[in-house]
Length: 488
Image 1: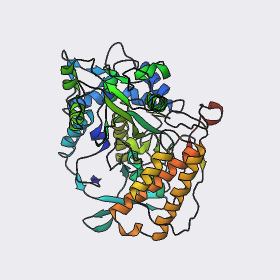
Image 2: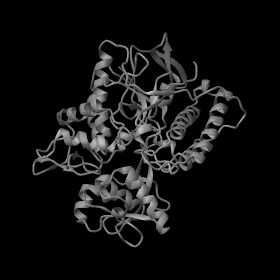
Image 3: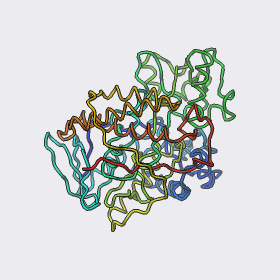
Image 4: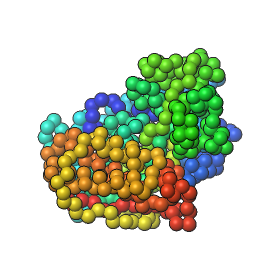
């Protein structure tokens, strides 16, 4: 096994995950309830067999993690669980507010002990090697040299594209590389219009954007306006624990109504509990000059998670034989139009393991769910200058962010199309420059997201169109896939 990572720094969206892992571990909970909550959050676009598989395999994943040394929080000797938005039971297991970091640490320690594994850090995967309609390996830039690496099977576990947006909870590595490589190889890409914007991200002047976990609201935190009034029930019956898309849009509406910021407050909770349960968040707020236990802190939404990605079956197979995908880069059908909180680390565990088993066995032709396909791309010839990554991220945030409309999306598609043509016309992709490769990924995936968002004329889950504000099941309860790609 050759394990490649493009950076040497120990950063990833999984490592940054705060909340936890959703699993049925309490007697009052049930598989049926977890399944129903996931389907409800997914707004009619989840694939039920994928959801059932995820939920039923979750307890075994938790048990396996315990065997591997994962240090979950406990209360009175039992695994501690918390409540998060849109869950009907306290089923989210956690390790304080750094569950992702604890998970990655536990897995990494065991993985690096395995014989027959070569790990290369600072190795940038550039493109997939497709021959005879099959993935045969990939091209890699390592130590300044370009190399083709042959492989019987390749799995993309590259994360999503949260860093395509100017305001994000994601590390810079989340630039859509795996989706861009898969699209370039002709794999089917699906549901990219569905981007989740987390509602509560630290928004203090001069401070870095930092996620304030949904688990805070699960433990009793409240969203308040500048006058200190709790406002969520004005917009949503479930109040502070409504689904992420609803809370994020409610915050935007409250800011528009008052002309002032929105805050997250835990001042009514025991300070000692807040410090012990959320030490990472307390420290981040302190670095910004704020005391979370004594004052409400300003928050606003930011891009968090891409529900769409490379379409796979339940064993991680893509539409290209020999190519697999797992984690946020994949579109398994679990999340539909909106991911239920704390199902993301779980998805990586369940479907990552299944992909590994499938890769080790006989590689068969992928069997995928029916999707509508639309050919979006044609040849583009122009002489536009190359943008910076921040140019692209600004366009994505302004026009393809939390609230979208036809005019803004059309402008974004036009601009991204010109930039895509400029990249191809400049023929800069052959030189293996990491900055250019990142720019290529951001433009390629950003264009796919903007086109899909322009095409879907309704609002559903993480996709909200102010010009089509209602959900339209009669026309749009279906998936849209992009199968076009650049030859070569």
